[in-house]
Each structure stands twice: as structure tokens, then as C-alpha cells.
Length: 513
Image (tube, rainbow, N blue to C red):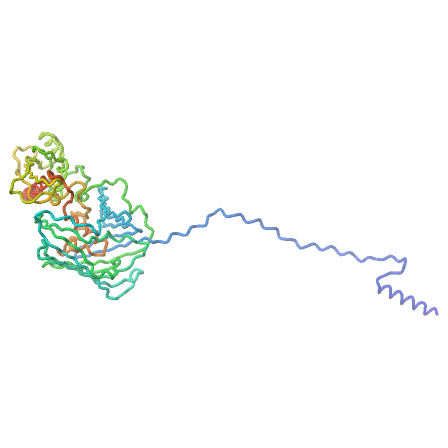
């Protein structure tokens, strides 16, 4: 019985231990408390990003302007040029002080002489301009220049562009009554590319028709037209060619073009603007001079200087004597003489001015007659009233300090019109490229390129450099087209004859000196 009691107690104790409880009155022992776990340390929060103060760089503009360097060779003569194109404007540098600016957006051409800071600005000619009416009793015929372009179908890569092989022929045909019957032909075998569409100023507009006056016979004038027989063939910009020019029985002249560089860049707009401080002039002679109009420079060795005195009016009719004086001086300047204008209201004052300006001779002019001609007058002079006026001019060429003139004579107006009488009057001369080629290497080289062909024929080229040279030389060979009064027209006609006499006399004296 006692054994069973102990056993029962042991079983109860084991049951209590298994149940996690103690007998009544016993002190419960708590298990050691676990240290509370700390949450993992959080990384410090990053400060909010501040907006950047540095602006995002603007992408550089894509180059769209074109710059082309070229070399022209004719025999032993070499010329270089640079053509720059920016949108609707073009700049041609001939490798000297002369620059041509084409402003297609303003329909004008500007010729610059950087040495003297002078310029001539001329509006583009209208492609469809009407020809002026022929003067009375004039004669002449028609001349047609026909341009034909043939695409050979050959292509090759040049300067990153696909170049097309084109053959171009310019031929001249004249009617039986034409003043100029000389045959001409220009053959060009070359490679041409299409420039980016952002380049929109390739050349001045082509003129469809014009008038050509025979320099040896002012009453003979031809109507000239220009025809393109292959308008469907796109030509483009030349990057290389061989041009053969022939005229009459003259020896052909062969010119080659080689584009040495063609690149796309960003050009300054200011390079295509008329620079500040340039003086506007009105004739090629003024532009090509080594000084500005009115400036007196040291006389060159071996060059005769002629001082042109104001024209004296002893007739009973008024006219613009100052205007005619200026026109005479500019016309004489087209020669190789050194011409200066004299000031003074008496022979003594004129002689003093001539000595101060180191003149070799003084050219004096007196209009002694302005009247209606008799029945022997042929034709009418250019006029605004329809009235016929004849003029007589007495002139003298005298060395300062001498009483006896070296040359004296009189001239009367003939049948030539004013438009061809005086070659350069203020604000009359058309825009021209350089005339005095010997002064500029580029123009001297081009003087050998024509093989006797006319600037009109050579001006049909798609080359903007040659086009500017020959088209402008063509204009330079023409005469002024300003309408004078009847009196001025008559005087101009007489002055034309006088200048020829003065030229001849001065050439004699130049050879003798």
C-alpha cells in the first residue's frame, strides 16, 4: 500500500512537470528573458536631388553652307577662285582684292574692291525684259545662241556627291543682215553635281534677249536671243570640265576646271554683306582704279596725266555742263591714260590746279554751237522732245605753262544716239567685272580663255565663276543706256569723236616720250 502511494506521487509529479506546472505552494522559476531584438538599422535617407543649374547643351547646327575652291588652267596661265554659298546668297573671291556678291534674295549683284573700299551695286536684269526700240536709220539682224546639254549616263562619286557626265555645246547663228557674223562655238565636257537644296543662289537669272551694238558702227545693232534646246536635262554645279572655245578662224582656247576642295560648313552671314565704310561708284573704271574717285595719287612712271577742265558753254542754249564734264572724264578714263578732273573758273585757276595735280596736259572743251541742223543732218539724236539738235565742240590739249596747244580741233555731233555716244556717265554704267585685266592675275588669266569667242557665248556656262566674269565683261563692252536731253545727246555725240582724237594723240606722245 505504501509502495503504491509513492508510485502515485511520482506519477503525479512527472505529470506536473510535463504540464509545466508546480504543486500548490511551490515557487515558479521563470526562464531568463531574451533581450528584445533591435530592428535592423535603416540606411540614412538620401537627400532629394536638386534640379541641375547647368543647361542642357544645344546640339550644334548641322552645316548646310557650301565652300568650293577651284583652279582654272589655260595654257601656262592658272587662276584660282573660292565660291561660298549660304542660302540665297553667294560670294566669289577671285584671289585678289575683287569680290562678287550675289544677293538672290534681294535681286542684286555687288562688286567689291577691297583695296580701295569701293563697290558697284546693280539689280538683276529681268529675264523677260523688252528690247529697246531701234533708233532711226539703224541696221542689223538677229543672232541666236543655242545651248544643248547631253547626259552621257555615266556617273561617279566626287566629293561625296554623285556626279553626272554631261557634254554641253553653245553655238551661234547669225542672219545675213547681222552686224556680227563671226561664227562661235563653245564645247564643254564635264562632271556636275546637285548641291543641297538649302543652297538656292547659283547665279544671276539668265537673260533671254538683249541688244548688241557694233563698236565700229554705232548705227548697226543686232537683236540677240539665247535658247536652251535641252531644258529637261538638269545641269547642276561643275566639279571638273574641259572647255574648248573657238571663234571664226582663231585658234581654239582650251580651259580646264579642277575643283580642289568642296566642303560643307557654317559660314558667317556677315561675309555675304556689303562691308561698312565702302564707297559706291558707278563705272568699272572707277572700281578698278587704285584710288577712290576724286583722290589724287602719285603719278605713275610712263603714264600721261590729263586734267579735264569743266566744259564751257558759249552757245545760246542751256545744258547740264557738270554732268557732261563728268561723263567725258569717265569716258577718257576707259583708256590707259591717267585722268583727273580740274577745278577752276579761269585759265589761271585751271593751270594752277593742273600743276598741283601734276598734270601733263589740260583738256579744255567749249560748246560753241547748239542749234537745229540743216537738211544734211541724218537721223535724229536721242531726245525727249523730238527736236533735232546739233552741237559743235572746240577742244584744246595744252601742256601747263605753254600757250600753244599740242592738239586743237572741233567736232560736230553726228548720227549716233546718246545711248552709244558716251561710254560711262554717272549712275549709267551697268555692273561689270574687272576690265583692266593686266592689273589682276585672275582676270589676266581669263583673258586667254576665250579663243576669240564673245563674252555672251562664254557667259552661257553653268559655272558661276566663269558666268560672273564673262557676263559682266559682256556688260562692260556695252555702252551706257541713259536718256539725255536733246542738247546733252548732241554734245555727247560730238564728245565721242573728240575722245577718239585725244586717244590717238596721246598714244603718239606716249610712244615718243
